[in-house]
Length: 362
Image 1: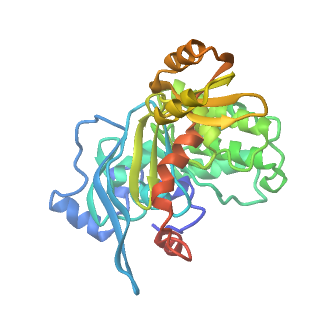
Image 2: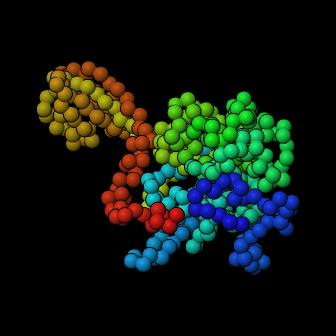
């Protein structure tokens, strides 16, 4: 089985046609020998769709020696949720996904996908992967694409292929070739392809990248429908506003280390309250600055930026007791972008010149 570093489609996980049984799977020699030793391929109770413990991937650099591209990664993805995997370029996202898919192998640590140890080929029938830039033969039509990839699973079901085309709203474009598809249409045929094997778990890399607002919504609605069907969706994306709309939980990785992980509702707690005031004594403004309020001077009055947890009601009462005027009170909810910047900024100051190891090893 041959893998390329870029443009790997669902076909990377298929058995050879006619070898759909367990004996037909091709495994690297180290996997076969490890299985015989009882080290790989054993099932474990299915507590999560994805679970890793101290998962690490190291490379050797001529100048810096051993470098951990992914270091002691602990991930937990529940069944039936949409999980966002976020991080700047070179953070370790691609390396992590390749390990979870069994394309590359960890240096140390544990990893389980759908209860199977990573590297177990049997799990590949239950998962699907849509890369950021999938490669399709440009002169094939949508139905031909689905038939081709279906054959790799031993599936030749015209009615199913038609149903998938209808689901992604491409059933009226069956005579168009891939070269005639818009970016949004290409993403939709990719999602149709990713459903051929009726997967329990989908890995989607930048599923809405480069799309217009209408195409964004179409893809978003499709992904949400996957969750409604009980599928687990693992999304790697830079589209933070889109992730905020659809993901239940997220993890933020930076320089190979998980910096934040949890439910979005929990991670985005701690918004701020903007209170516009006037006629406030300077002594009170000084006191408010001491108590976590950011004070900005306006053409008329002041803007008090107060954390939710810092008792904004107490600030309002203090202004009124000082005979000041409260002009407006506006809550500002914490956004995923705010969390991302707060989380990434401390580690990003020492970014390696010339790009990360991950970027150089892809």
